[in-house]
Length: 297
Image (cartoon, rainbow, N blue to C red; front, side, top):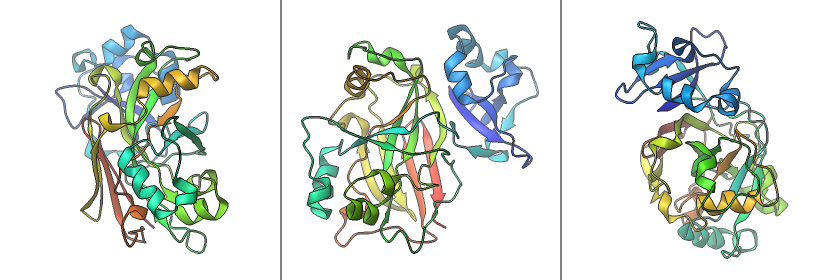
């Protein structure tokens, strides 16, 4: 099933909705199943397997409460993450090549070990929300479509074989990046952490809907032009490896978001580069999850 955070009637109140299999485009408020959680993080942390099974079937919902997805405002599924997003750098071989070509000193990294960095995201934005251009600060604005992994229960010192059991679901993350800030500061945190630089969504697809390891088509377009096109089975460091390795030294709390890296085709990878400008429409898409669309403003 797919879980959404949404708003209705422009009231500014975030609600949780469920899109059940066989009912594409229809959204049932969580309350229609007799359940209530404060937000998506609360649901991830506290929902039971029995409750998850109940909300997966629209037959268990109160009749007449379904909404059309087109009639609600979609928010990021986790608008306010508890902690920074954990990101993987250079986790597709073809992206490693284009990154080093753009700025060798900043991006030529060893592929033997995973490269981790943090993306500050007090608030993530949803499909339809703007990407701020930050004129005067950002001169090289870029996009990166990534598969986001959502941890479902506290995870510490788990093996590679155990790692899939700790995944709640998957989403799309656009790791928006200011390349000039990355290269000028010789680190990635500032250039990836500006407000509005973490579009996410449109939903969370629960892990039971996706065969493991995920082998999903992943792509991005800018104004309808295909820029990135790959598959998540091309990750250099697998999802299970990532979760296991990180958990050896830190507790991955329920609700943790891991952005697993982006394939080739980002703006800096072209000659000359194709950076974003005001008015550009970026659509990130992953098979089985949906589309995440944002306009640069």
